[in-house]
Length: 87
Image (tube, rainbow, N blue to C red; front, side, top):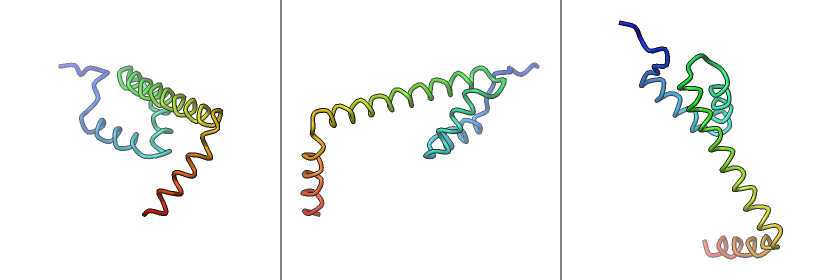
């Protein structure tokens, strides 16, 4: 019985998802797993995860630029200070 070369064990996925959820280290490992290795299925999965990270980063950057361009930053800071004073 030959084993599929793209087979990835349950325990690897448990480990990989745990590591990918770690800040900074997880992002670096997603990049490594997306580039290195012979397993096409695993590489494609981590490439997709990497693209989602980049899309989310771009959306957050666009939101930040919009807030700064509209001059809403001082108003947001005032609201945060009011919220902190209530707590």
